[in-house]
Image 1: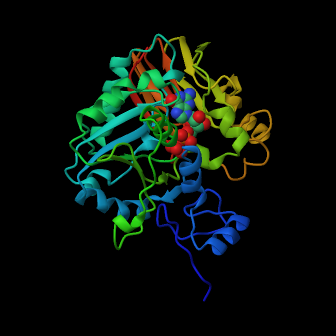
Image 2 (image 1 turned 90 degrees about the vertical axis):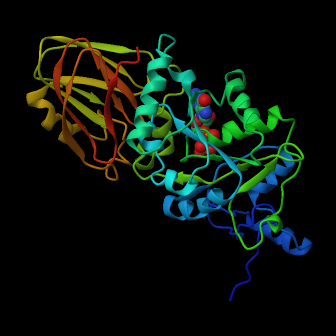
Image 3 (image 1 turned 90 degrees about the horizontal axis):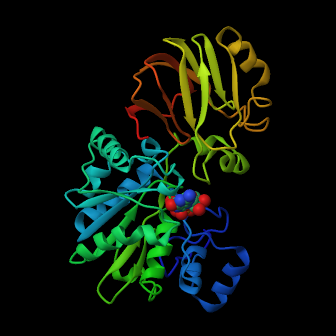
Length: 369
Ligand code: GDP
């Protein structure tokens, strides 16, 4: 059998194939490691030498197994979610695995919301979605991992729970977990050193322990891949188009019933019934919005998907799941959150059909603006 090597930092089995997976080491570095007789995977190497953390991905069932460890440890858990994709950020079974450990939810990327957003209502909605998924956080914190000054509250919460030995940071991929940890490492003046797995006999954790003080550590856990996240169906360039990177600017359309709006080829909204109304879309500025008659929508989509109606572009349209219709009644003080994209709102009660990939959650909430 082929020789296997373990990373001294996280205990992962070293591999040279998948850059975004656990234990990755480029081949050249593997050779050097063999000469020296010690191995740090790329993730641990960067953390040690540059105080910079990169995320790795893992499937959720594998991850939940590992989380059993948290239930036994003296842990405090920070569960990071993406404010634009709360449903896509849900880790089903998290509560079962972290047992009775206290946890807070950090709802990230708040900097992308329009300034006029009602943060109290937003927080409330995050709580509601959590509770619907049988998750009962002690608190919901709003933050921007990219903006150090918004992290004061998170740091306070960490300090207030310092009697717990370890702070675990969990979350699905792309929610901003590593950005957050990098900020925390900065705040605490750099990671002291990586603790080796020998402190955890008999376990391969794929988790990285980052000591902040002599007694306390932050534990980075691998990012869970949720297949329902929109990003899994798009190319890298398209993800950049779709995920907001600047504060969202509302785009408003006055529509009559029997009209349709396409958000590129990602989703479609049919206005079935109701008075003439103003529809406001809060989505990335780079998504092409197309208005047409309901009677022409099917033909238009068949003809122009992947081209005029993009993203998804010609290369990803075949992988993009079919759009499935869902009827939704919306009151005038409500939003539909479009998981991964943003949301829409309307100034009259209306009956709609939203067409989206089946896995992409559509939830109605009280308007946050
Ligand atoms: P991870 O996979 O959970 O570790 O996520 P990353 O930390 O790699 O972040 C994913 C993407 O979201 C990156 O492009 C980040 O720059 C971006 N990001 C993370 N946090 C924030 C935030 O608070 N605001 C904004 N605008 N972008 C963020």
